[in-house]
Length: 251
Image 1 (cartoon, rainbow, N blue to C red):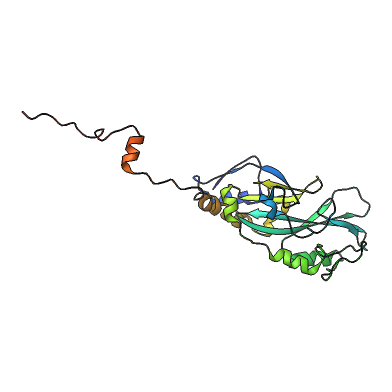
Image 2: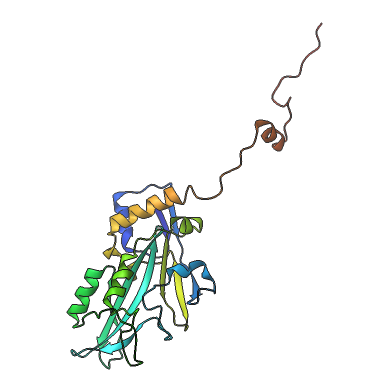
């Protein structure tokens, strides 16, 4: 597979092992915004992370909390669609409490790595429960609710191959939007920022893309309708004598 792009991604390193010049990935990034409401532009609504969907806050991020070690945290669910399959992740962001500096991120794609990071930062997951008081920080649907987090990660790998093949979109990433009540979806974007190498290493990711573009996408689309030889001849402007020698008179 040959990649035509204005930027580099982590799986580009696999090009050093050789590539098929006949398979081309034109990696041009585009984006759209979708509403959290399912009745508005519902086409891509399945990409919105289910975790935290019951919250009514302006952003789909667990409210910032501070632990005993003096760090402030945020938990941001996101979704990566890669070669037709969905992969759910949670971005654990932290910085020194009261700091105006940049957030440091750790992207987790499975329950074990998520709980390991939570333990490292001094947090424990809560059991599933309904929100009974307005001051509770961890209601049902929270990134800190054990059962919800398990269900969220277990849903990874759901197949939407036909959907993305028809739209010729091998990569899509759904992230929180600065616009209240919306999510941003970026197509054919860089995956290094989401640390997607935690799911597929460079060589495997390159192979998956090559098979999706050369296989699934190449065979997608409406097949040509069958046409008879006679109709094809007439369509090209010929007639029944076009390729025959005209008869001659006998002497």
